[in-house]
Structure formats: structure tokens, C-alpha cells
Image (cartoon, rainbow, N blue to C red; front, side, top):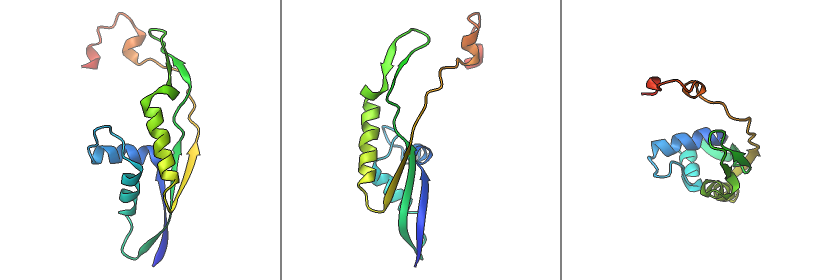
Length: 124
């Protein structure tokens, strides 16, 4: 048996897996990620380790550039769910969780919103 390491880009893998499995919230559980990652192993391969790479969920406060409202990501349900997801993954045998840091780089409006006289017909 060959020992095999799997390298997973977490954000890309989870987004695609959520679509593939047609999950209602769009995001798989840690168990679903591990099950589907193991599914790629061939008959002559034995799992050595899964290296799962992803960034921590964004946890800062941002100001909406349109209406000036503030939103603190750390208080969102999505943030709490991602933290639990990472905890579950970190407790799984054969998984090495590697986390990066997400940086906000400001806002950029799409073309129709730059010109207030636009009739937005190019959005349809």
C-alpha cells in the first residue's frame, strides 16, 4: 500500500462540495469533507494525512459604503459555524488543519453603480 497525503484548498473544495451535494446551507460538515476527500483514494493507497488549508473566518467590523451601516462579522451565524467546522476538522484523525488570515482590502463598486445616471439595463 502507498501512503498518500491529500492537500485540500478548503474554500474551493467546500464550495464545490456544497454545490455537488446540493446542501441547503451550501456548506458541508467536517464529516462530509473527510468522507469525500477519502473517496479519491485508489485501492492501492492508504491515507497518510489530509492537509486542509483555509483561512480563519473574517471577524472584523466593516462599514457599508452605500448606507453607512456597520456589520460585525464575528457576531454572525456564519462565523460561528465556520469556527465550529474548524474545531471539528482539527479533532479528526489524520487531518492537519492549516489556517491563514483573511484581509479586507476595501470596497469597489461594480460599473453600474459608479454612474448614478445608469439605467442598469446591463444587469438583466
